[in-house]
Image (cartoon, rainbow, N blue to C red; front, side, top):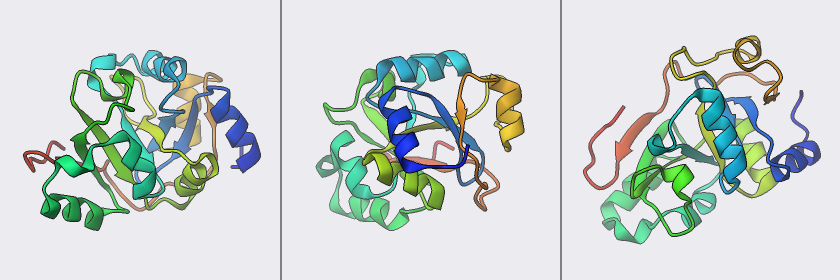
Length: 183
């Protein structure tokens, strides 16, 4: 389906799972506060909840309720803000608002502010970050087209049409406490 904000807002509120193009691959997403929807993504991906999920947002402001930014040194905070929007996912101390089914077995939550215009529109339309995990079962390659999403998940997800971004590989992941590059 083509992105239409009113329909998307309703699907988001109804706890639907959707696939959408990101900077490099198709992602699976939903409302990050809807446990049933997140569990559906975990089921589709055959992924354990302990691994956690990435939240993708249109702005730093959308991320702030989910993190404890003030726990980081000012220079680290600046480095994070300077890397966004962009293909860098940061592991940041989670706030009490971040549910365990998003952070998994970690005290950190993975967050990114996207450059992808369609994803920015999606986040803006619901005034929230989205869950963002690659659209594939755990042992398969990430989908790079809506046809690949359909082959993996048939009609179990709503597919939002659009173009992938310019990235050739998934986002870099950095631990904000240790500055270690995870991916």
